[in-house]
Length: 124
Image 1 (cartoon, rainbow, N blue to C red):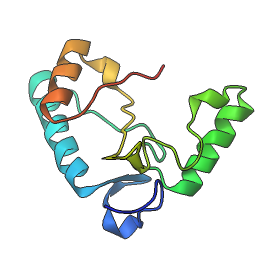
Image 2: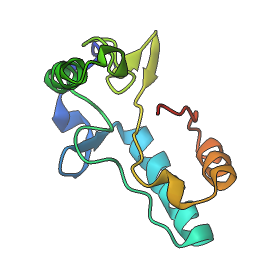
Image 3: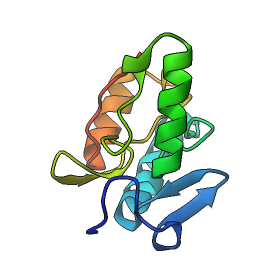
Image 4: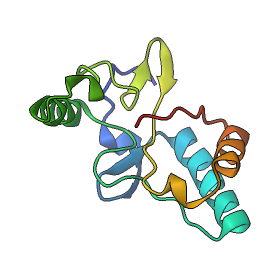
């Protein structure tokens, strides 16, 4: 996609329900990852509530505002520079925050994420 960070029209994305949107290729890989985790562990991974897959620009502004209100501005990217925004540091990308990742062994999470092409980073 050739849109600026946080500027992909939502109708070009796959809507997973609520505020959850992913780029088509990411949605396919997410579905495979979730299915494999379910098959191995009987746990269904869930995206953290809120815009925690693709994050449109206004949501990036709101996440930054909330982080700063908590006195932790560094917990959120500057709007337009989010790893959730569809384009980050010259690469098409869409971070996904997983709410229940700790419900399965870390090694399993990491192995299956990498199988499906996800780069595992942990943000406490």
